[in-house]
Length: 170
Image (cartoon, rainbow, N blue to C red; front, top):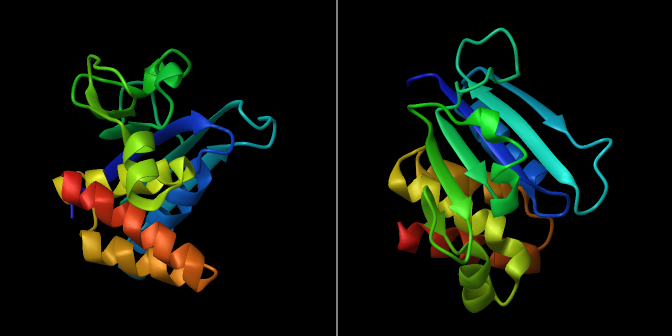
């Protein structure tokens, strides 16, 4: 496995921390080294939130400017807030309803049509990047973590369907 540096940016309440935790737990389950750092304590609901995730033999959890291998933007407007994540070799995926410079996925619409909850857009986006092979782990590894972390059968079903909708899009 190649070491991987992932930046995840969104707005408070969009599930940035949830997908960061899914990825970190997946890495741990695979026996990989993982470091993460989130900025959320001072963020109000709806405010900018960012998490850094490094899988591999790293010494610091924070991403240096332009060093992300993968940058997930759950909110298009955060491209202006966290542009330092993006470097020449960064794969950038953006949740947006309109076309743009980077790889665009209308994860909110897909979540709404597939599970009836726009709030599941984070898992649609996660399914998409897993299905594209952009992550250190296989989709089945991530799906097992989602299953283990979902706190009720209803939540599990919503999470599973949203993740699978992203996989199907890939």
